[in-house]
Amino acid sequence: MNLSNENIIHIKENGLEYIQFRKLLEYEDILTHCFTLKPLDFGDNGNFKDEKDIVENNYKLICNELNIDYRNIIRPYQTHTNNVKEVGNNNGIFLEEYTDIDGLITNKHKKILSLTFADCTPIYLFDPNKKAIGNIHSGWQGTVKQIVKNAIEKMISTYGSNPKDIICAIGPTIRKCHFEVENDVKEMFLNQFNQMSDIISAGEVKQGKQKYYIDTVKINKNMLIEMGLLEENIIDSGICTVCNSNLIHSYRKEGKSAGRNTALIMLK
Image (cartoon, rainbow, N blue to C red):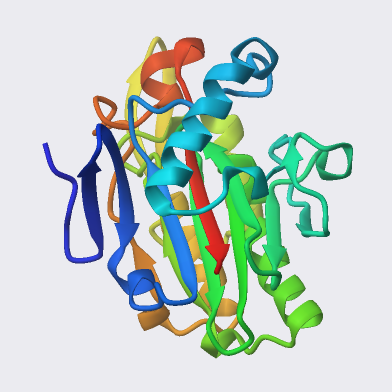
């Protein structure tokens, strides 16, 4: 099975599979990025200590494939916040200074920003003018908390980015077709985004409870446009993690046994 489409390329090399965005590849002289696929697994907060050797080996494999140094990985301890942090000089996984962080930005070279996903929305940000990048983990909670707005605001204040210059790439995520919720979560979205139309659709009634489907990708796109990004600079992979759970780790499909994909981005 091949996930390639007009916006992404599905690469299969040396026993590894990952995707890259055609638009970001236009800047491969200064930028490296990818979103990993199965069987690579990068562990979660709970099992990382036990899986550390496996995870580190997987980082080595994908970084060698991309011709970058895995020792320059920066990975935060993600907890579904809207906190975005500028990367300093330290490298590592779960460093104390990156606790409760779900977004990273930097203009430093050779800093590999790594966030992990199993249905949540990966959002890559790249300002080719100011030479700055961002990597954002926007799960449904991060979307309600508007983390992507925080990230754009931080790139503006930190690097002087003009939103019209920023390119955004939205990776594989759970799509509206499978993001089924009950009334409590629906109300959170309605309270935060009541001005947006068509983000919520009523589903079936199951076990006496009304279900709803929410389009978090559309919400994030709308927020990016509100922040001044150009619609043509928002590139969507169009891939649903649940629909493609044979290739992509999906918590909604696999539950607690789900692995984690990683999104990597680095300025050369």
